Amino acid sequence: MTSLKHLPLLGDWHVPEAEELEQLRLEFEREMPALHPLANKSLNLLAYDGVDDILLQHSDEVDHVSVVHLTWLGRTELPNHPTVEFGGTIEAFGKWYAQLLRAANGR
Image (cartoon, rainbow, N blue to C red; front, side):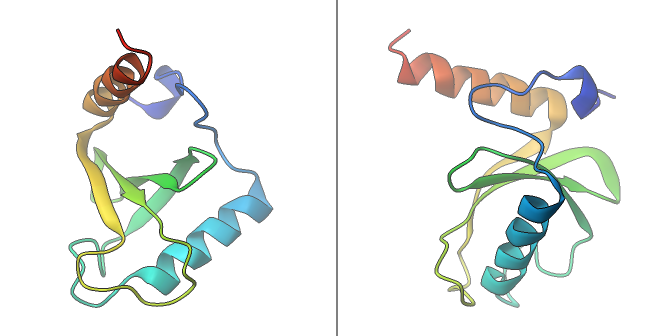
């Protein structure tokens, strides 16, 4: 199992300080509709890309993470929002995000 502390955060991803962490957690909870795939899951917010995406660890599967794209509308979203941009292992997240960075840089 790979842990987040062994995976360098790429790009603008960072571990939020307490105040930012609370703001992100509250926005995620506000947006989460009852029928969302992540509704009622026990999740820990690990990191934030500084814009719209948050990295969540599944408490029942510590090597499983999801990247959720927040809308910042401050209200409950439609059933398919906020969107889950990625779901998989922490190691797979690192590879997925590195690939996104390469594509963005034209490599």
